[in-house]
Length: 383
Ligand code: GDP
Ligand code: MN
Image (cartoon, rainbow, N blue to C red; front, side, top):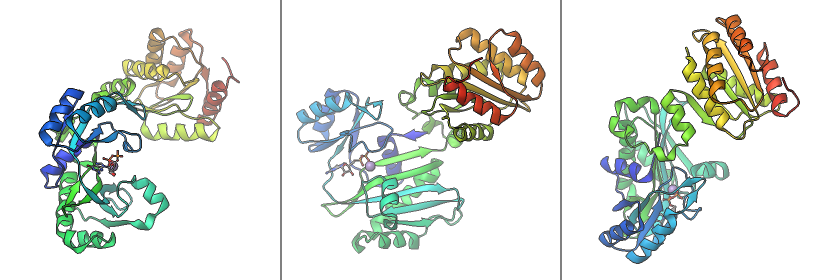
């Protein structure tokens, strides 16, 4: 789960990271009031869950409360990378002398958190990694020892930070790591962390990604979820307990098991197609859940064919087949469907599909199923 900038920064601040004074507005009038209270100049910042808002025109400076109101009105009407702006953060504008990147992520290879710093702040870190990887300094954190003082010194020196800022940098790095730990985050990032004209360090932008599997321990954080930022399909999937990620291909995939779902996507690519989604209906999927899954897949206008790849273990093929038929009763199938059902109760499952009167293309092996789905999506194969 991604958090908004203002949410991330407040969590950072709770762990001792200095952030600008500011507040959130949903209307231009509210923005004006906040600007009056803060004093100008202020920055008006779109709160959407994507990076690169600055480049997209979603971060604007305002010199008077009236300007803040006007600019907030413009920003609140914007769409950034497809996401409508519903909230703006108004922050006291900082006098920026230098922009630094500071972040913590879980490094799966090292099985530890890694803290990264770069003198190339303000730019997306992926961009720095591509163009100038030497500019990124890293330290691996031992979870039992925590972030050590020498490690923050290593980072500060590594990015050429002047000696007078080392203490403040150390405090911010520790605060960021504490916030990361306390929230069960998979990413906590300050970009940019700035050196101001007054000679202090300030976290001007913040980003946090929380581990969904840790959210049950944090009901307060779980409440921060912005349901407006989920597509209707993603919300429906989450509420039904489905792992669903929309992609931009044309073959809808309904698979049980995350590993099999990944393999299915790979093999579709291998045979020249592109998956429209990742979808794991889970083990022991019941008819109703399957129906929800199919409705989600067919709601995507890019889908030209659907591939059911079910390996019956705990999941019974007849249950899935019933779910498919139930779904067909609700959502008339408009594209060709390829079904591969193997394992527990596969014969019963196939019989249910055949008796349903709906026409499906059947396949035995995964390779065959994928090839047929690619052909069906290309209009080269019909029932
Ligand atoms: P992002 O583009 O989504 O990462 O949004 P940021 O919050 O990082 O803002 C983008 C850029 O706007 C920063 O790198 C800064 O250069 C600039 N910016 C943000 N806040 C301020 C501010 O208070 N004062 C000034 N002068 N520039 C700012
Ligand atoms: Mn940023």
